[in-house]
Amino acid sequence: MTESETSKERQKRLVYQRMKYRAQIEAETPEQREARLSQARKRYYEMIANETPEEREKRLAKSRARYQQNKEKRRKYHREYNRKRRANETPEEREKRLTKQREYHKRMREQSKSDD
Image 1 (cartoon, rainbow, N blue to C red):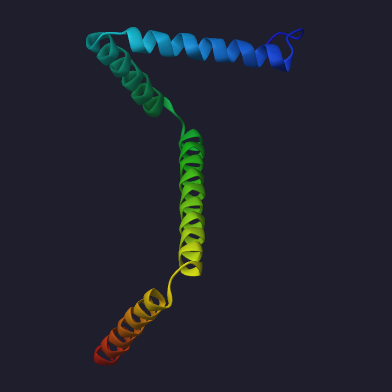
Image 2 (cartoon, helix red, strand yellow):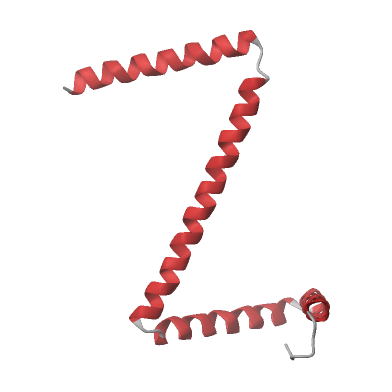
C-alpha cells in the first residue's frame, strides 16, 4: 500500500486482485490445479521443516486459539438454538423431553451406584 493510496482505493485494488485470482483458478485445467496445489503443499512442508521451535509454538498457539474460538461459536449457536426450540415447544413435547431427561438421570444414578 502506497502512502497516497486511501483505504477505499486499497480495498478496491484488493477486490480486483481477488476477482482476477478467482478467474484464473476457474479457468485452470485439472493438471494446472494439481500442479498449483502440489507447489503450495511443497512450500508449506518446506516452511514447517525450516521453522524454529518458537515459530512452531506460535503457529500451534494460533491454531489452538482458532479451534477454541470456533468451539465457543458452536456452543453458543447450539445454546441459542435449543433455547428457541424449548421456548416454542408444545406441552406434549416438553413432557416427552422431561421424561427422557428423568430416565437418563435415573440410569446415570444406577450406574454410579453399581460402580461404587
